[in-house]
Amino acid sequence: EPEVTQTPSHQVTQMGQEVILRCVPISNHLYFYWYRQILGQKVEFLVSFYNNEISEKSEIFDDQFSVERPDGSNFTLKIRSTKLEDSAMYFCASGGIGGFQPQHFGDGTRLSIL
Amino acid sequence: AQSVTQLGSHVSVSEGALVLLRCNYSSSVPPYLFWYVQYPNQGLQLLLKYTTGATLVKGINGFEAEFKKSETSFHLTKPSAHMSDAAEYFCAVTVPSGNTPLVFGKGTRLSVIA
Picture 1 (cartoon, rainbow over the protein chains, first blue to last red):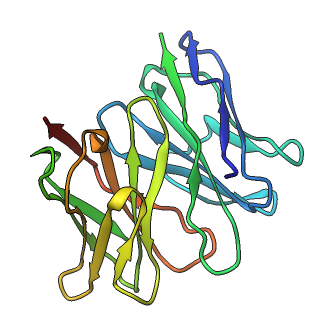
Picture 2: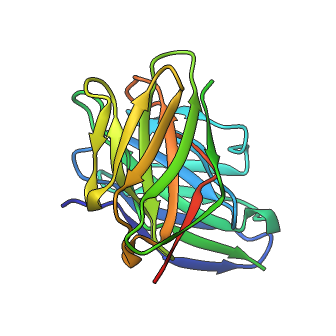
């Protein structure tokens, strides 16, 4: 079964540095998402992406964050000037079309800010 | 806006016993409802979904859930717990739109005692 793949599985970064989290969605999916899960808390929506542009974003997704689909396969989340509170598990998800398709999640990237 | 409440952050059952994980939702329009499972250090795996039609939906690993509009509930059940069911379970809601993000509950950790 097709999978959403995320790299790296764990990223450790110094506070203030920039990080890029990478995702390869399922190939025929058209909707892409980033969610995050701070340790011990619920999964929170960050941003959705469709037709090469952001379609919706939460209040968490401020100017510190950006997303990009640089080619036909990758979907990236960039976090500039990281803060301690950015430490979390970041999940990428993708969804198809044709009726309602559930979102399929990757295994996540654990981001640790020191 | 949608919201999800999962009653009980931690549920413990004996192996072979009934599993019941509670989920109540709030939505101004007919919802789509999901249960995801998260095993330690892994991503979110779809257990089952309700979109339209039959209100009792069956998922993987012997789980099922029933959509009860009058009670705004979507409780997850399994007749007989197995040790491998120990995980975190998340209920999520969205609305019938191509790329509307999921709103998750806080999750319920299921422990299975031998």
